[in-house]
Length: 266
Image 1 (cartoon, helix red, strand yellow):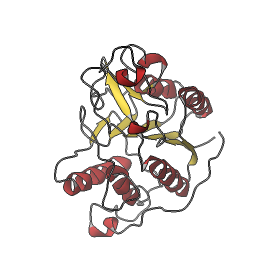
Image 2 (image 1 turned 120 degrees about the vertical axis):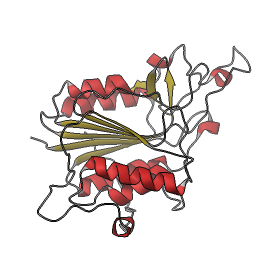
Image 3 (image 1 turned 180 degrees about the horizontal axis):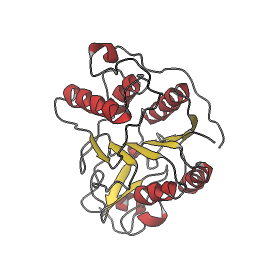
């Protein structure tokens, strides 16, 4: 049985080029390395088309073992429509409210599908929402002009199914910063990497620490949100008899993972 399973996806190479991002591959790659250090069977994927993303997530879901701790991490663009959240593949040209269901991945459906495999918990971390949706297309006939038309800014609030933890890099209906003082990673993920491998601290406490740091560094301009229905403490590393670490300068000194990473097949 695979006790810990993870999939991290990062997308930089968006089309049209004005939607290109900088830190997302580093974010997803570094998260994968950190999760592997924690004993996860973790996979990394980058710059996926819709077809590839749909296929990969389907493969990952089918690989989930009953009782597993499951982590899904995404760094890239996302939007919402009609109360549903969608993570975006590389080609977003012409993706708008009228066709988003067949051109992007519905996060709620993704989480629900994971739960059908009966994992112990699903932890979904979304470091996205870095683009404002246009209020109206300049040219109704142009797919470039219509991109994201009719879709709302940021992610909509979500109802977490039982045994689910959902973490947003910013508040619902808001935009996250792609910049941090560390340069390599986004603001949210740079702090997440500093905490994620801390021993003897449950994941919800770690995420609270991340939120505090992000809010402080951004001077309250970015406030991460969490939605949780998990009724037990989930440790990414097995707890032991030592006293659990709480937010402190010691945790802030933990190094960011910076090693190179190759993609592993599912």
